[in-house]
Image 1 (cartoon, rainbow, N blue to C red):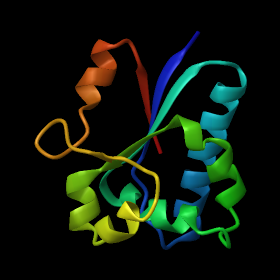
Image 2: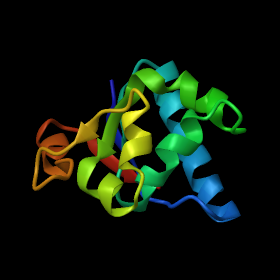
Image 3: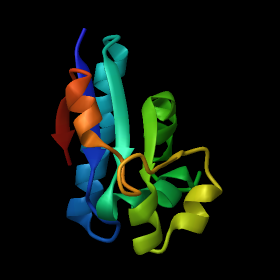
Length: 118
């Protein structure tokens, strides 16, 4: 079984960024479908995707829902910095703050996860 942490760093707003997040979610779904251990983390500007994808009207919402159980969380610090913390609070996505108010990617490495960024 593979252990993979998928980190979304792209910011909402461009066609290219939409491609990145869709590819991240599709990769997470593929891993999930093969019973791999996958954790999706929204970090940096990637935190802006949480409220967008949680919106049932967004085209990528069904894909987001398909991997919902693999979403580990969103960076607390970056959610504040990018102005989406209140919107993230309205979702089921956990805010991660285990290292200086950020998610610890080192912990994933220590636990044997490969880290893939989008």
